[in-house]
Length: 427
Image (cartoon, rainbow, N blue to C red; front, top):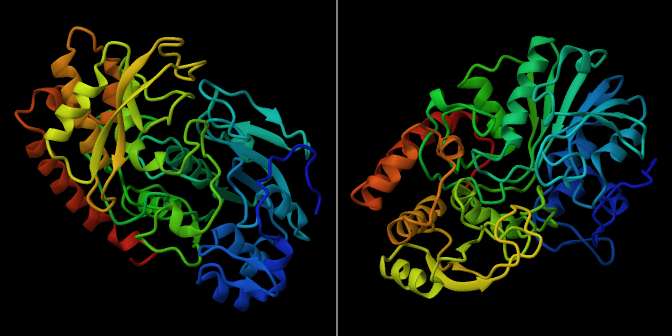
């Protein structure tokens, strides 16, 4: 190993040596059961990410290859070894370059474009895919034999890592380079689908393909879908996880949580994120860096207790709205610093019945009804998040949200049939 001088590797209770020492068969067998031990007192998680499976079973696939790695800080084994360090430990494998998505290689940049750089620990070039270029150029890919992708997605259409995945596949395919995706869990499971499908006319970096807001795909399955259903031409292979099931949320994986972006510092936030993210396009706070980001909606002009009581009276499945109050301090969304904000905190009462898009849209409709003189929208951003030119107008003016939700459910059912051939895991 050649560990980096400033590699932010998560320290866990597991050791890489214990997993590798157990052997391929033993490691995979034990990993299928929670809290089983290798040897004496070392436990292993229920799920092994694709990176672990690569190390245990498929190292020879990288032998003699010059590799470009698309990753960020989340690209670690179950024991906390970063993909950069792991690949550099493989004999006869050359890691040539790194490609970083939104938030940067270390996941610390909150917003804005990111410049190309050099990894301090290894001296490798880091090509930013959230700056001047969103897609690798031919010059960036020159001299590579393989593009390896290891990104932790969150299961929402507008989370940009899936767009980065697709654009890298396009670029690699154009240069005749194979792409190998190392799969990772969808932290909100792979069974439930929620929200409207994207209208291709509104395609953007916040969603290129007609998938629902909550798409129920792992990053590897997403890659297979865009290649097979949407015609992204490249030589693609996916190394699946071991032990993951479609019904798993993050807590069931046994893996330590590494926030894929600065605000999603709780895995619970990924469950509400597919709905609360719509409020990015408003003048409401979603918690910023202060109070449970992407689990709350608040503003100085909202009566939190009144809003909570109204919403709870509407009887939305799987959720209770709790009145909250907080004062943003250095909020990373720039909203209402030092001002007391009131609003609601979404508390799950039944995870299986909870629809994050409907639950958040209920809040948006009610806030619009009660505070139309205060609530403002960034309509271009709302169009990109909602996935169509008509999303916001339809949402606010529909006679009832339940009827609109039924339309979205029908769209999701059709998408479920479309995605079926590309799924890798059972329930």
